[in-house]
Length: 160
Image 1: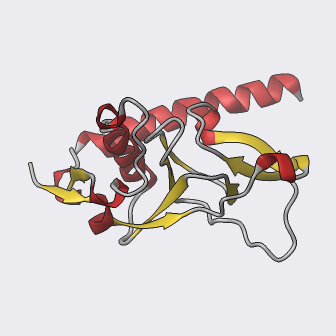
Image 2 (image 1 turned 180 degrees about the vertical axis):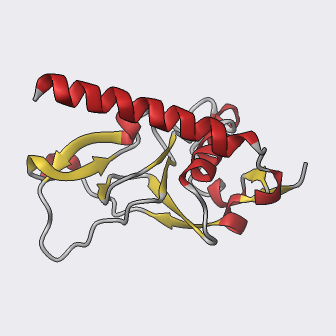
């Protein structure tokens, strides 16, 4: 299997580095993504900050500290907390391919036991080259996503 560095497939960018306790909670606001392993990394919804553009949707977020290497695909624009990186694909990728890479990056968590952070080494982690993505990825992930969308729509209909 051909392995490449994360930085060969993604631009590795340090996030906005905001502190949630200094932001205004807004249930209709933007996602605030932190180093948590829960809820796709989203720990709150916050009010938009005038003059600060959110990070675009479609990138991967990776915790450099805290829940190290928790990696998620962000479907909406967001603000980020400290020690959080986002990965912007250097070439076109489908959502399924991005989800595959979330799994691949997370698979390296064992390298960061005992409080080690991934801040300096994230860009050099080895992951499969795009030519190595298994054929089943597109089909399997799309079925999972479709299933979850149906569940969410059902829940929304029941509550609405």
